[in-house]
Every structure is written in C-alpha cells, then in structure tokens.
Length: 180
Image (tube, rainbow, N blue to C red; front, side):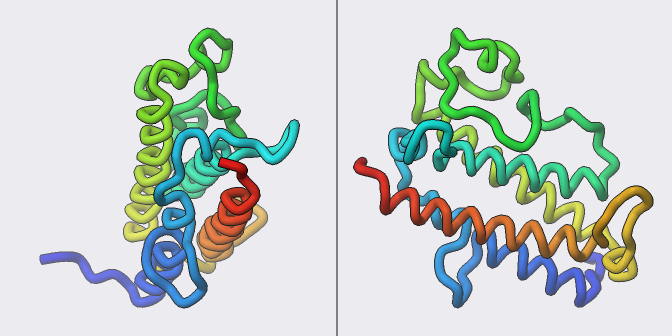
C-alpha cells in the first residue's frame, strides 16, 4: 500500500509540477519551453556575456539539486558538474571546464545533440529528485526554517516553482529573439 501524503505536500507537488512539466492555465512551463529547441538554438546568445537557453537549463537543474539537498542531507559538491549556479554551455572538449566535468556527461563538441539531451535529462533527473525529497516531508516540516537558513522549507519549494516559471519566460523570449 502506498503511504499517504499530506494534502499540503500534495498541493506543493502540484505547484512544482505545473511550473515544470504539467499543464496549467498560465502557459508554457519550464520543460515545455525547451521542447523542440535544437542544440544550436540552445547555444545561441543574445549578446556577449549573456546566458543562453542551455545555461539556463543547467542553472535550473542545479537549483533543483540544491533545494533537494536541503532535505536529503546530500553532500555539497555532489552535483554532476563541478561548480555552482551557472555553468558555461556549450563547452568544447579541450577546455579546462570540459576536463573538470564528471564522466557521465558527453563531450559537447563531439556530439552536441547528445550533450544537449544529457543536460535536459539532468534537469528531469533533478526535478524527480526534488519531488522525491518533497514526498518524504511531513506537512509540519513545511513551516520550519532550518538553523542557518533564511527561508522556510515552504518558501524554498514554492520559490523553486517561481524560479522555473521565471526561466521559462526567459527561454520563450530567447527563442523569439534567436535568428535560428
């Protein structure tokens, strides 16, 4: 028999999923915003020093990982890529960034399509890990603010949903701006 999940947790999961990959009234969610985006479109930059779609995808994956880690007690630095927050994409295999990446990710210049797919899969994996961490919470855990943290667990998790939608909007705009 499946364990009962508190209604507050169920609602929070629905919010996280609507922002990520489930239908909702507000329009395109994060996963929908990258549907049919080619590696070339994902790599296109609107200007020097500006983030591209690909970097936004990995950035969103990282923050899903960071939020899940708060509940699972996972080790810092256990994200599949070295670094935090923003990760330059695409990365050519000879660069120091490519040399420091963990083996699970393909070399980006050898097969850009598989590298783009691997980073989209990473985003999916981090969303599923976050969902699993949320399912394991008790409703009473949502209002708690862990020692040394600035926001409650609920604020963090609802913020992840807002973060997904914020970046979905950015991606939609980048797709419109792209000449590709």
